[in-house]
Image (cartoon, rainbow, N blue to C red; front, side, top):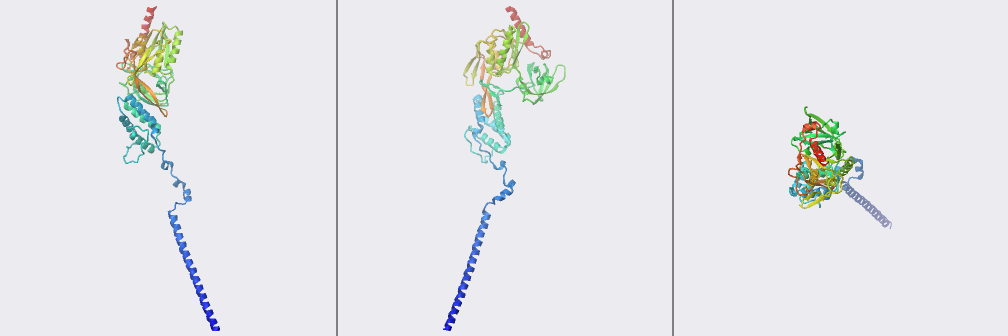
Length: 487
């Protein structure tokens, strides 16, 4: 029993050892499994760390290296065809006005040539370009693409400046010196564009094939620089003006206020002298008058602008109060201006008659009558002209002679009959193109040879140097004789 008892205890002891050994093995196995699990989880975590984004705090630590500059990471806003609407409108106006001498491909070629000069590169067919947006005229697809390329590459260039210069390149292709692109100007109801007047403040006249100063305005830059009547202009900014049209010379001398122009002047009996003149904004009247003996008034109109008719009206009121009996109207050196202004001034001397006929680009015609009831309808007159009398000034002179208001004295006029009109394109840009031509009421044109004077009187350089106005003296003598006969 006891043996049996001992054996049983041994079995229990062995069994207990066996159980203990099995538990230990299980614990070891569990521990091993835990280690494996921890290893796998750790490996996954490490792999996840490698593939995951850099923790956010690393970007904050070095903002200068992780925050890119706007010029390299912020793309420009998408461009649209509408962003160049003023240029597309300019194309339409140029086609309407000059379709008889050039076509759309020529305009596009002019625009492309200018833009290629700006970008210093051509379009690469392999470049990934944006689709052509709506609003781009047919034939101007490459113009828009190159514009877009410049817009992306040359952000320092102002878009409006680039657009204005591109339109100017197309305008230049027309070959019309009267066409222009202007910015921040006012367009009058009749299409006339009146801009601020900048320059040196002097009248220039053609004399014996030369361009001569006839009168510096008192207090003007020209007067301050010592320029005198009779000075012959030889060069402007180092360029000889020999053979250049009077109006072109005047345009060379004009320029923005604050800029300088260099003139080489020839004075009688002396060597040429170079004079530098600083241009200013000129606030000058467009009309002035004096009285001659015997009741003869002298009225000079140097341009035809919106305010001219009112100035002329005021002068005529003054002349009436002075018992003026006859009038010299001086249009020499007047390069024109507004057709509406010419019509309004004509109304002071005509009594409702047709002042001019407008021939539109499509060949149709419109007659323009002057107003009636003007203050100068009863004055005997002489109208002075020369080859500086052009455009709307010729229109006025032609109307007065056609209706027998007075003869023309002087030298043949310029012969410009083209009418121009300004069109607002948007963004402060205005394009000026031809809109037709004007005709004398009888239907004739002055385009070939200008207006021929009834009495040709030539002004010489010696006359100017001596302060003697030969054509004005001849007109004065004519009217004096006329008045004497009437008496």
